[in-house]
Image (cartoon, rainbow, N blue to C red):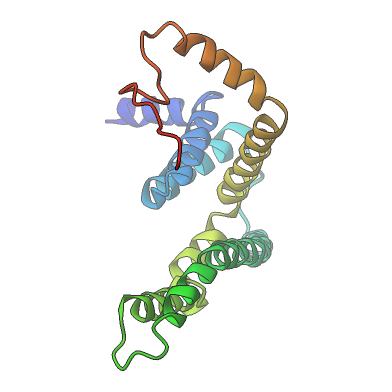
Length: 201
């Protein structure tokens, strides 16, 4: 039994274990598998503790470390909530004009139609999604998992910037590559049935 524990400890405290566990936690966090993300982050923490030989245990140091960690997590959670709400408002703002137009068309109706119901449902859904009381599990996760969450969020922002750069500066290049490849097909993708449009009278 001692040999088994020594074998496991040898793996956990090796130089390659904690980076693998840390990357795995980032991976799970990006797919919102929070349970697996927490578990692998704990394994990474044990690995870091064992590999770097952190100083001997003290209760004072523990409480100071916890206070600093929670404080940093709270600051991260505030930032993430700001970004979360801002994205939800931006998304809802795009939908709102169409919903309001459909509802206003039924203003004189005695009964509520689909337009009114859709608007009321969308408004209630938005209020629920942007009420922090309904997202305490998400906020708590951000506080406790801020090292993993912040890195995952940073990588997500980098991916978004790359996507915007491709759309703005390289769209023509990728369109030409696609058009050249599709030209090998014996069919017009824009008019697969070969239907000719009639001139309007």
